[in-house]
Amino acid sequence: MKIYLVAGEVSGDLLGASLIPALRAIYPNAEFRGLGGERMEAEGLTSLYPLETLSVMGLVEVIKHLPRLVKVRKHLYQDALDWQADLMIGIDAPDFNLGLEKKLRQQGLKTVHYVSPSVWAWRQGRIKGIKKSCDLMLTLLPFEADFYQRHQMPVTFVGHPTADRLPLEPDKQAAKKSLGISNADQVLALLPGSRGSEVERLAPVFLASARLLQQKHPHLKFLLPAATPARRQQLEALLEEQPLEHLQLLDGQAHEALQAADAALLASGTVALEALFCKTPMVVSYKLAPFTWWLGQKLVKTPWVSLPNLLAQKELVPERLQEAASPEQLSTDLDQLLSSNEAAELQRQAFYELHQQLQADASHTAAQAIQKLMTGQHE
Image (tube, rainbow, N blue to C red; front, side, top):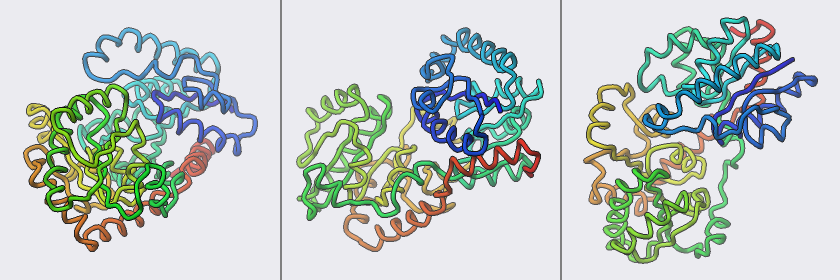
């Protein structure tokens, strides 16, 4: 069995590195070739390009790198045919992979896409192109699978690898100890995003919210993880203008901060899922440039933006977006989580159930679904 794998970023490399052994358990003589990072190479992938080749963010950057990306895709397409691959698995990177999958599928290869693009949320018409590109979609989240089923597209919900990796019961005491915080201290984690634009829009509001909270909770401790050295510099400059008592600025360590925290204020994104796995009650917030927000309102088809609410299909955690993300509103929401054990416990109980729902042994389930596809058993 010759399996062609193409991953475009670190998260995809992690998924691929865990999928390869699960596939090898079914196909002991399988060979793996394509594009991936160090983790996938360590599992036996022959990668023709470095992982960073596809990591291009933003419209201007994509346009600038388009000739190179087109050249890479043409080369991988020809290489997969010359190598006589039996199967191609595109891991995430939908703008790159779906086009490659479509061309290879037209040549008779079976194609699988692992990690759904957000087609359920916006530009739903893309489903037509996806159906032409791949024989099977593997989704990390159950509501994504529901969307594909409604559109008669072969799909398997495989669960979330992070849910498999993290324990159902987080060790908050150990996390507090590792950060030098007393077990008796009440802690709030502030996570204003990993991109410069996110931190610029959200961090001043988050810090102002924290200062308002301090008036009611004078002994409250704050943890502020900086995603990168550049974000740390940005936050340090902001803290000089807006100092906050009892604040610990961390290098990375978002997971530790979420585990140690009694509540979290965070930017909408995958970090909300990590907070859910840490069973940390949260308030989710986001601010976009005014035109982007206006356009998003027209295009987005879901009533919620945060993953906990999308998974629960109800407002489980407060979402405060755009004008609603005011220090007064955010501090009121957080005060409720810090003062009322009932409000926090409602979230925690739901997080526990959602974590269990997403623990589905993702790599093993994905490999089995691929085996069914290859033997013609997939519905």
